[in-house]
Structures are given as structure tokens and as C-alpha cells.
Amino acid sequence: MADLGPTSMPDAAAAQRSSASQPTVLIAGGGPAGMMAGLLFARAGVSTLVLEKHADFLRDFRGDTVHPSTLELFAELGLVDELLQRPHDEARQLSALIGGERFAVADFTHLHTPKPFIALMPQWEFLDFVSKAAARYPSFALRMKAEAVDLVVSNDRVTGVKLADGSALSAKLVIAADGRHSVLREAAGLERDDLGSPMDVFWFRVPKQKSRDNQSTGIFAPGRILVMIDRADYWQCAFVFAKGGADAVRARGIEQFRGDVKAGAPMVGTNIESIKSWDDVKLLSVSLDRLTQWSRPGFLAIGDAAHAMSPIGGVGINLAVQDAVAAANALAAPLARGADVDALLQQVQDRRMLPTKIIQGAQRLIQERIISRVLSGSWHPGAARAPWPVRLANSVPLLQRIPARLIGLGFRREHIRSPNAFPALKS
Image 1 (cartoon, helix red, strand yellow):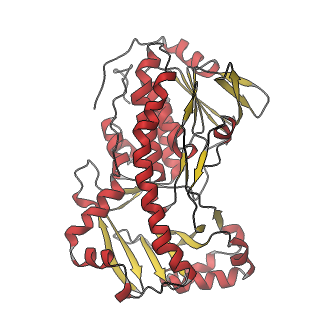
Image 2 (cartoon, rainbow, N blue to C red):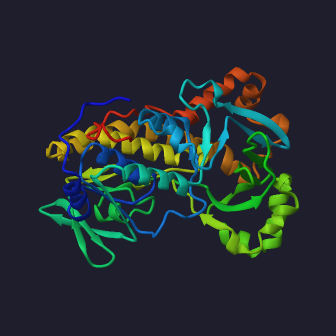
């Protein structure tokens, strides 16, 4: 585990009181970016408070793909085996059904990482684990049912947040990790580039029998795309349709919807009848965008608040976690020393913008070249007309390592370089 050496260890009780009342770092949003940042800043001895507007982490149909790059970070913290004690399934290969024929797409087993697979873990399990790991440090505090709704600004510098209950909190640094519809990002007046998306998604689950191997797959058929994530005893399903088409799909009725799913994914069988009404189906409005500037004095945006990702490749959690690591690497040690970090905030964007652009560019290309054409019916994928890279990778297994590396490790992956102020504590 990389370590820059311990900072001065704060008094535990004083640090806890400081974190809860007037923290050095205030993080709005208890998702992957916010919780990981909270863990790393607290580990560095920085008084840290995370605000989460909900009462718990139990919200279904959130991203739950923990990639090898993220597992590697937890290995560096000495936490990966403990993390993997939480309920999860392991996807070591990915495949796609195109025109009724299965094609092998990615093989993660050859990655040179501690855990060469994707861990399919409910996000509430992941977040609960990170919150409990962070709570081992006296400099960490988490407030549930605390919604940040605005910024406090003094002399053009962000100095805190306003909460939905009318109260306000001050901090030396405010980190917005409040998601793709970030309120604080808007309050900060940061400009955003909308890259567009041709699709939205209905998420739902269908029970299944547990299989020996993970059967997660993508299904491409004329006018229809489904993603089937094998969660042991149920399928987590994504029904992809043209942007803004949710009302049209609903208008056809739930029975027709069940029929469309079964036609595209026959493996659901009669279990599709578990979808009783539209209450069992959740809408994800897909966005693809990024801020042109991630910070201003006293303020930094990370994760989906800085760049909303398409669900393609399931990379959202992992990019958010990488942002949190980069932020802690650049800022935690100076903050622990009591330094002013405003001049350092740009380093986080400079570090993370290129991988964001590369991944979003790949997602946009897939959206335009494949997804929009399949959904519009202008491309009718049959086995013989699967994209040539897919056919080639299926024929030459060695080539399946390339998409595995791109999906599993991404670009410019981070490593833990922020300090550990509590070496006597287990991370």
C-alpha cells in the first residue's frame, strides 16, 4: 500500500466533534464518489463530514458493477477480502447475444490485478461497507437525512452548504458528489457540456435459478436491446429504448412489455410474470455530460456531479471512485497540514479529465454506431452481421483481453497515495 507517511494524529474525541460540527472537508452525497472520498480524507486525519440526503443506502437499480480497478484500490487499502465477504457474484467473462448467437466479448481472467473479475455487488452493500470502514477513523462523520440544497459563498469563495432543514454548515472545502442531477454543481455556476444520449432504460428484476457460472450478457435483436445481469437468484434487467420513449412503452401495457422482454430474452421464461405492474419497473433517464470546469475556490465536483456517464460498460462507479482517489491524493496531505488547497483543486480535473473524455468518447461512439441504429431498426443484427471486432474477438480468444482491460482497468487508473494518519488502525 502506497503511503506518504503519517501526519500528526489528532485527538480522537476532538476530531469526531470537529467532523460533526465544523469539518475541514464537507462532502455532499453518500454515493461511491462521496463515500470513498470520505474514507480517504478521514484516513489522512482530515476532519471529514459526509452528508447523505436519504435515511439509508437501500435504493435499488443503482450501478453495482465493481470493476478490477476498484478492487485493486481496496487491495491497496488492505480491505478487498473483507469487501468481498459482502454478498456478490463474480463475472470473469462477458458475452453478447447478437441475432440469437452468443459471442464472447471480454475475458478478465488474464488481468494482472489482485481480483481479475467484476464483482456484481448491490450498491447498498458496497456503500455500507465503505461507510463502516471510514467510521473506524475518528476524523470521519456521516449524517443521514441531511440534504445539501445550496452553497454558502463569501467573497466569491464557497465556505459551506445550506441544508434542506434551513441550517448551514461551514467547511474549508466543499466536495459535490451529489450525482448527475447535482444541486451544488448548479449552485456553483459551473458550465456543463451535454454530449447527448439516444436512449433511456427501464430497470427491473426477474427471479431465476442460480447457475454455476455467471451468465451476464447483452442481447441485441432488431429494434431491441436488453442487458441481463446475473445476480445469482435473479436477473437484473435493463430494457433499452429510444430517448424519451418511456410513455410510449408504458402505453402499450405491461403485458406487451413482458412479451417484448421474453421475446428478446427467452431465458426469463414464465418468471417474467413476476413483473405485475409498472411499479416493478424503474426508469433511468440516461445522460452523458461533463463539466468544463470542476472547481472554484472552496469547491470541487467529482463523480457523476462532474461527469454523468452512460451505463455502457458499467463504468460509472469505478470512474467516480477513481475521482475520489485522485482528489485525496492531491488534497488530503495539504489539508491535514492545515494548508490552503484552492490552488491545488485544478490538479484533480487535470488528472481525471482525459480518462473521462476517453471513456465518454467510447460510449458516445457505441451509442451512435450501434445502439441508436439497433433501436431505430436501421441495423438488423444477425449472427453474420455482428460487428467485425466482435466476430474477430469471438474467433481469437486472445483478443478478448483487450476489451477486458479497457472495461476492467480503464485509462490512467489511480493508486492510493494519500497518507494514513492512523497506521495503528485497520483501514
